[in-house]
Image (cartoon, rainbow, N blue to C red; front, top):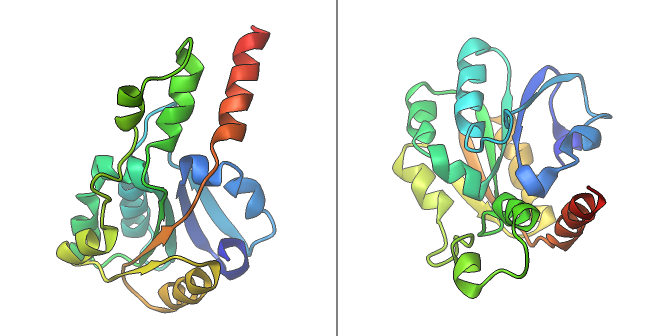
Length: 189
């Protein structure tokens, strides 16, 4: 849906982390746009502030922010500034209820199996973060979706409207291929 619906001259800010490792390649056939990868080095939490900056710098252009839920919690206060400045941003929260990128990093640096306690520190589902309430509480209209069809419909609406809108897209994710790749790379050293 992102590649198919992305408007001409949009700015795509990508901090989708593990949920969108191949987003750059997936949008190669989209209409002409600028792509900003919002993960400098290994720091997380830059997606929302980068989208805010892009929208302020280029107010005539639609900004699309793809934001992993865990990383988004580092700077969720940017939602208030996005609302205050009436930024034209379609924010997509990719909700898997975990710090998935940190699970991959843990596999990279840890010898042996993780303990249940370690694993619990990387889950953000107890309680699950309600991004719709969080966004609305900061003045950003928001909706939650749980299917690809609903996402497509809501993403189309968000792109058609001026101003900020957040879509919380619940998704399942299998991290094992990423963990396996990291482990293979580590063993190759």
